[in-house]
Picture 1 (cartoon, rainbow, N blue to C red):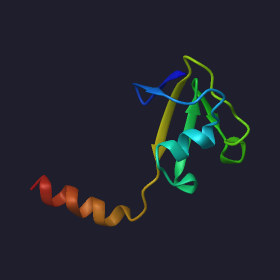
Picture 2 (cartoon, rainbow, N blue to C red; picture 1 turned 90 degrees about the vertical axis):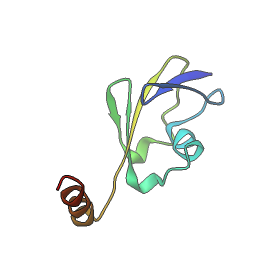
Picture 3 (cartoon, helix red, strand yellow; picture 1 turned 120 degrees about the vertical axis):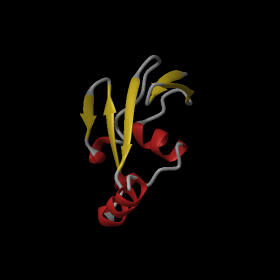
Picture 4 (cartoon, rainbow, N blue to C red; picture 1 turned 180 degrees about the vertical axis):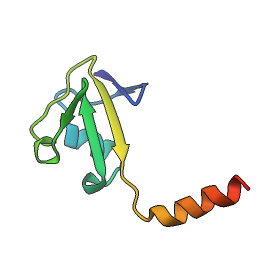
Length: 78
């Protein structure tokens, strides 16, 4: 079935769950936030939340170590 993930169309198996999508995208389930049709899906609900054709999903990965990233930005803008 076809859904939209971060503004890109993607084909997923029928009856796929949010957890299935996270696995398909090869993302670490503990470092991801998922919004389904503009509603945040709790991590504890990822396995029980099924996707439907036409759904819109936003996936955000969480990155630690912000200080190193800030140093890169500082260097690149200098």
